[in-house]
Amino acid sequence: MKMKRVILALALGLIAQGAMAKTLNVVTSFSVLGDITQQVGGDAVKVTTLVGPDGDPHTFEPSPKESALLSKADVVVVNGLGLEGWIDRLVKASGFKGKLVVASQGVATQTLEEDGQTVTDPHAWNNVANGVIYAQNITEGLAKADPQDASLIKARGAKYVDDLRALDSWVKQRFSPIPREKRKVLTSHDAFGYFAKAYQVDFLSPQGLSSESEANAAEVGALIKQIKADGVHTWFMENQLDPRLVKQIASATGAQAGGELYPEALSKPGGVADSYVKMVRHNVDTIVKSME
Image (cartoon, rainbow, N blue to C red; front, side):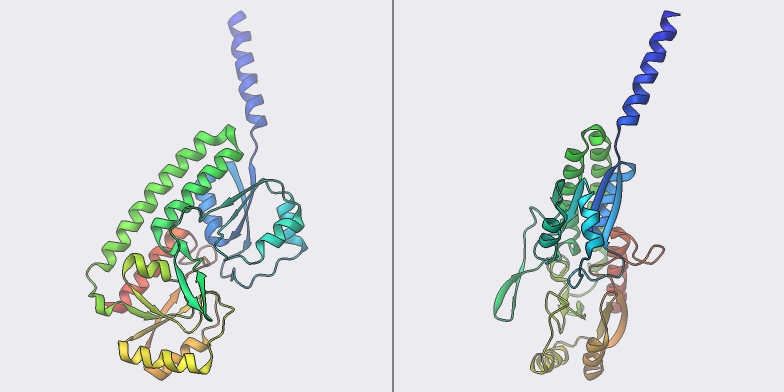
């Protein structure tokens, strides 16, 4: 009888402990971070993403609805590096008191000259080695916010990091047979700088780091000359942008359509790029196919 009471007490203790376990309410700034956070957090998190699939994180304009979401969040995950120009105002307006995780912390940043200024490129996740850093930062942030589930979160995070390291190796293998001089493509804006450096691919684009930037006639004319001189044969549209300008440039140069890339927004659920891993695989396969 005494043993039964001990077992019952232990069972009740476990039930009480389970009842106390809290699902973290996490808000992420855009869809790529939303997926990485979900992969790391699993059942320990409820993830809400502000800029959803096919959305543009540069031009997003938050409303009172987004402010209300942040006010109830335990954790907010952002990219940083100037990608979300609206995030600081939103965090302040919402009265958010939880843990802010900057996924890009520790990344070796790259810069570009834009309108006479040196600007930090925020698109670090397009180098999968940086995706590893993102996953590690998010793992650490979630584990600190939820000590009770920390061991589970860290185990999931470590497994996901291993998957990303394997993905990074796969990307390098996919490009290895392609001669360096053939690794040139035309896209809408400068979202692939980290990808370009990591995997030795040259990207030309009429728009700068932000999709809000506009190319003038002289810049477009110079780009057309460069494309012809460099022998760029393929252009790609981006899922979150209007493709009209890049189509016009392609028409003037004779470049052929190579398909759709996903540089900073996932596809809708069920699409070809509805996770970070699938996004990378789709982008790489699409680019490599155009070069083979």
